[in-house]
Image 1 (cartoon, one colour):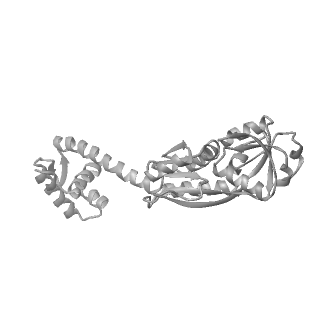
Image 2 (image 1 turned 90 degrees about the horizontal axis):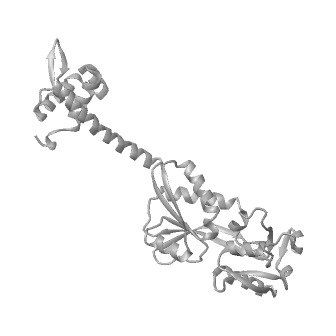
Image 3 (image 1 turned 180 degrees about the horizontal axis):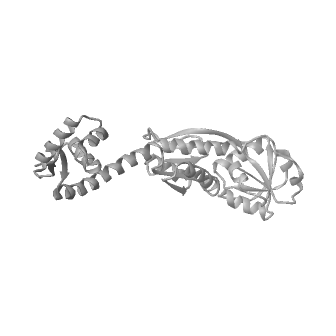
Length: 299
């Protein structure tokens, strides 16, 4: 006998009879007629070459061979059950894995909060969060080694597509007790001559900020630079000057510094990066929805 000589229906008929003990109940469980179950059982016995039942008083009684074979059938069906369960979990987005990368400004506080909200809704899904420089994050997305990246970059590199989540205004941050901390809104002209903590030269944030102050004809005392938003915040907290930071960073500062609206508004684009090869990714779509909702609350 080979596996091809068996049919799943034969095995189902055998299993049903072993569970419910009568052909009538087995037929009802399978949704077929009693003669159909009898034929399936006879074919099954013939295929396996075993005497599985004794016929007494119009009933089928399992033999010792039937009980031994039934144990194997149950083990096999438990595997099928796991397949069905796994398929249901994947369909309901309760199984799988997702990897999301972001620069430190997003990864320190914002990304874990989004991931926690996502995980509550998708129990059973493995979530990996990576803190990477934007260029490396986009490289991993292009290579499909990461599902998503959250970036401020203006244009995607080859192999990556962007989904714009929106634009959010940068915030002014000041040492607590600074003279401008009493103002509800800090204007660019208020920064004339003030000590200013800047991002590293040549970075997108630095270029945007320098361009705005140049357009407003405002001169700042820019003697301190840092490459990470968290370092900028620490320098401001230490009294080294004022700064502009993205709203995600500003939202996580608590009482460390004074956070103020800034005019004229300098908006930061927030993009979700995906591989151009990514298609039909419901878990990634769900994570993006959570990220968009969290960003919307920053406005």
